[in-house]
Length: 230
Ligand SMILES: O=C(O)COP(=O)(O)O
Ligand SMILES: [Mg+2]
Image (tube, rainbow, N blue to C red; front, side, top):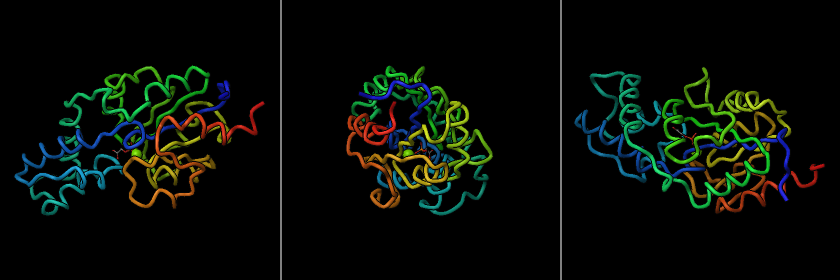
């Protein structure tokens, strides 16, 4: 049995943890790159670019296709990228297997759910209802919502504070080193999903659990909280 306790929270990363977003990210990047007379980037490349927010994604795509743009600044290119990306509708098919049912089940137990993503806030808020996750999260903090973002622990701390819970009542679930870093910085256990977009071997991130499938999550949460549940 999972804990039914509204003073506990699960905080999720988005890209590579809940959704496989690289197809849409690559499509949007390739529209932008074509506008700037650049070659396209491949999906495998884009997987390596994701995780540090939109500006870094665009910067890496330009670096991989000839270097910085001669006409536009990176912030201007990023704004254009976000506009293109937001115009591509997401679908629930982008959710990794079992994400919708597991999240709904976790929510039903009374646990609070938060989202800590480096994706821009506006794109995240557009995406969630399209994915069928519109009313699920009690706090959503995107990568441009604060002066800092992951790997700065203040990003995760902002989500925890908005949920109004203590750090020792939270678990962070993510797919890369940024998620591990914020969890470590906030003193929160980290559960790593192995199917996402890691930049370093996931097994080296100090995770409390390494999961191949999202359906394994309730069991992993029980292992972490099992002893401390009243
Ligand atoms: O880098 C991004 O834009 C999103 O990455 P995240 O959801 O894995 O934090
Ligand atoms: Mg991620």
